[in-house]
Length: 451
View 1 (tube, rainbow, N blue to C red):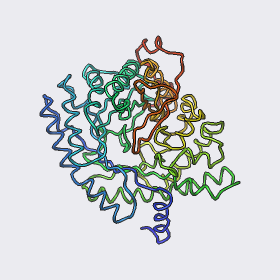
View 2: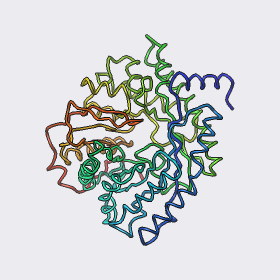
View 3: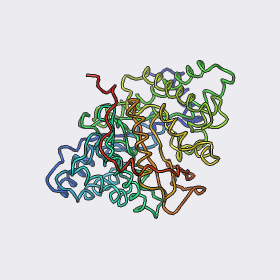
View 4: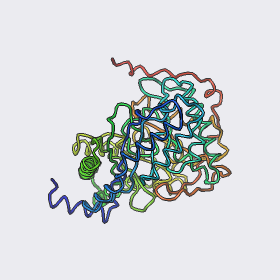
């Protein structure tokens, strides 16, 4: 149970420091819905989601009222959809529309899992599924998509990497009336995890139970506030304060997760204690790094400060819950963090620096807007670079990049809400077309041979 002091601290975190439960995500297995034709499968998936998740929004609202902690998003994740569509290649969008309709019916903000796992090889039905992603994202509103192209055990599927550069370009073009917004709902992974509650990369892994509740907590503002009184403190003291703060945040998340699971008749999965920023002032991971002592995020020292922050958050979280999972670290999405937006606008953050930062945090090149004329092979090169970092370092990495049609460096794009806005960042003028077009599979590193 929480002590009176802890309750008062939590109230302060909510009222003054932007603390919230970022998402309650219900993972639902749709494997029982597989049939030979698209319509029957889609109808069964719709019915199952509506039945399992019908109370998720009302339960979240009840928990908000009872515990006084805002729950910002309610979401659903499903079995990777490419497993559901193998018998009706070319008609995958029928399922996509049913999934989007189900999300709207139950009232969740997003539904994740229009996904494929092709880290080692790609079947003909998986290729057909991936090729359906641009249209699927263009004709839906709340559905999100992801593709896993590599892992530390399998290596990197360079054929899939090359294909995903083209898919991102096509998605941007089909949603050009919204500045390529479809790409904000599409992420390419290496080492994707099965219990991630955050979008756009959430899916319900085949190793999960029938229905599972995963909760993502977030408190950049709480950490920032805690560090404001530590002028002149040592780095060791800073790390200890971050660790203690993460402990408090995770304790609240675990309480919400257990209650939600009980009321929704689902298993309690994990608490993801990632520091997920918003575009609101006072809720920025970048500002935490600057409070530690950087003139601006992106300057020298940024990667070291971020490594310390990420590690301290994890240490505090695992002491508070035995069910920590998902991604659990510090997110650095450019468009979703007011400090990152400002740094990108003044040139302090570049794609090269972002890539370096992703070696030590979650998740990767995230919510980055680039010129609309960026070649597909250059986008594939970004994916390959991030996948290599993930593969070699045995961590989850990802790319969520938006080539904004008709816009270039010096302009900006506005997505609104939690997705924020982003200045369009410059990409290297030096391409990698010949490398990407080689295809094949990049072998796994030697340390993958652990059995």
